[in-house]
Amino acid sequence: MLHYCKKCGRIILYYDFEEVDRICDFCKIPVYPIPEEFVASRSSMKEGVREQFIDEYIKSSPEFDPDAFARRQEYEVAHANDFNESMAFYNNSKAALAGRAGGNPYGVECPYCHAANVRKISFLGRSLSSGILGLGSGKIGKQWHCNRCGSDF
Image (cartoon, rainbow, N blue to C red; front, side, top):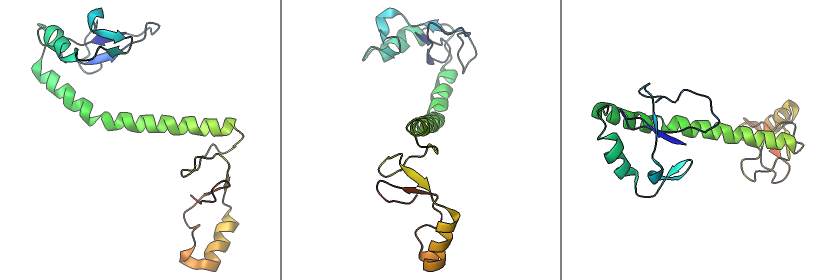
């Protein structure tokens, strides 16, 4: 269920089964459920009503702090990269687990064809390649070989 902070305008999703204090993680004050007339689903607001909701419920609240509202928006923009990095880590971890479940003991996926059929390039293989080809070896700095598309990464 969506909740909002009357001071900074932060909108937070809490699930009904969560036994947590419903407080704004930015202002550290209690948050309130968003009225049903603005809610499309448990996790989203209806199209085109966000500004109306902000004007009617947040900016008209006696607790509203314009400075906190502006700082929160800057904070969310600055920390959007943290969220994207967390999601990338999560997706990579999920792919690694899927690879392990599919018989790939390394949990590594080819970045080019996304196959889990990879093998580790041995130290001996890298040494021979760089010994024969020198600095022109394609295996310098590579750890994995894809058995499907033949790329080294």
